[in-house]
Image 1 (cartoon, helix red, strand yellow):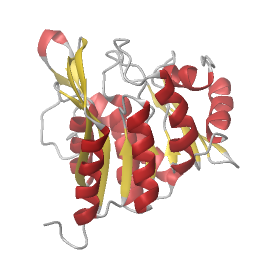
Image 2 (spheres, helix red, strand yellow):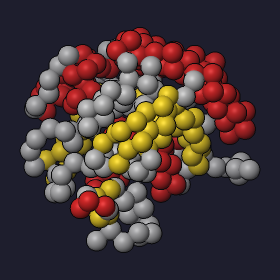
Image 3 (cartoon, helix red, strand yellow):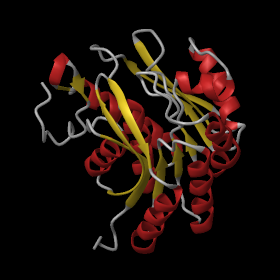
Length: 271
């Protein structure tokens, strides 16, 4: 039983067998940031750092039952959505969030994997824009996801500012366009809350892209919202958390690396 003072976050997302992304990355992030993580699994994927080789979607009925079971006991202080797979799941998740008036929703619009496997159907994208974005406190698309959502290619910070305005106009209270997929020595996340554009920048960590950064960022935003931080502060703290996990990335099989979610506690030697 969770102590009465504990903060909890529910992740509604897919499972990553490699542990680098999806609910596994979310739970590691929650633990590292001091909140209790609960899950509603939307899909089981077979994947590793090389890509996704199989996907099995969970029925909307079973996902709804998972959400019901969690909310009945834990009452989340924040919710994060990741891979939702299809329109039926998106619709059901939006309905459950409204049914329970769940606070601090962070929508990570997972649409296509890094290895270009489709993770959300086209009609699912439409319903995400229509039903889920208006419920969100923060939406966190990266550059490829912006292209899927609004058909806009981003290569500059100025374009990211415009994209943030367009995404926020779809309904989320705040939008942040993450900068990891754009080129350059500096990574800049662009935040817009309907009145002000704010940027959070830092040096790019060398060593190439690692899968799971988007999941980790959005789950960190949710964790900080659950802990009482305002959205802009939550986004900036999440940026710093991901940068640290990248700097301390762990060597894994095939010469690749994975994020070190425990870098702050020194639980794992990431040198």
